[in-house]
Image (tube, rainbow, N blue to C red; front, top):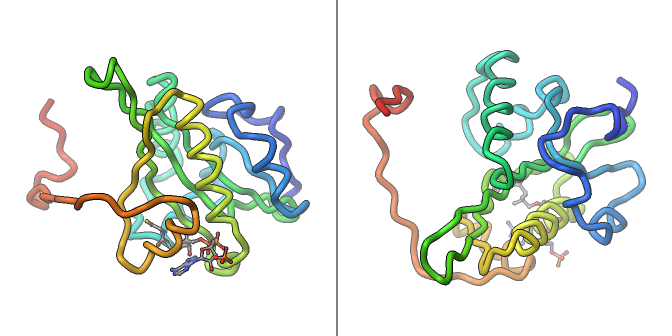
Length: 183
Ligand SMILES: CC(C)(COP(=O)(O)OP(=O)(O)OC[C@H]1O[C@@H](n2cnc3c(N)ncnc32)[C@H](O)[C@@H]1OP(=O)(O)O)[C@@H](O)C(=O)NCCC(=O)NCCS
């Protein structure tokens, strides 16, 4: 599949939000950009499956989720790195902006769902994704950017400039209720 330039894509947010210095540090065969409405066909879910269990909902449902994210403006910033030679996605990550009533109506950036294709790990793509997301968070006015990770990934996030703070707590919904919204 030939590489599709940004101007031929329907992007979730303006491409200018991704800093030029992060762009410049990628090898020439790779391109970083916002998630596009056609990225289901570029292996978006396959890359996420590097991280956790992914159930394929089908293209129409994937697209409805894309539209739901875009319907909340200045909130969701999913980005991808694409291999220009194949037009396939090789790395993904998201930051979403939580607006608060405290800290003078402050905002916090939450980094989620970072994954790099197994064949491309160790080439600083994870670092570039985190640098881009952190810049988007800070340029959105967030006073901090936070994420959860396994112990084994702590050294990676330390290399990205993060430090360990506090603990994560989780309570999973009963499996029969997990996908049935009541509100
Ligand atoms: C974790 C992950 C995102 C890292 O991406 P990556 O592109 O392989 O990492 P990078 O090449 O950008 O690494 C940047 C630095 O962190 C180091 N690093 C990366 N992963 C590491 C790890 N698990 N332990 C120790 N150091 C690590 C690299 O050696 C590199 O160090 P250097 O600057 O001294 O050379 C990637 O391995 C991945 O997708 N893993 C599976 C999914 C996952 O766990 N996602 C994170 C969910 S919280």
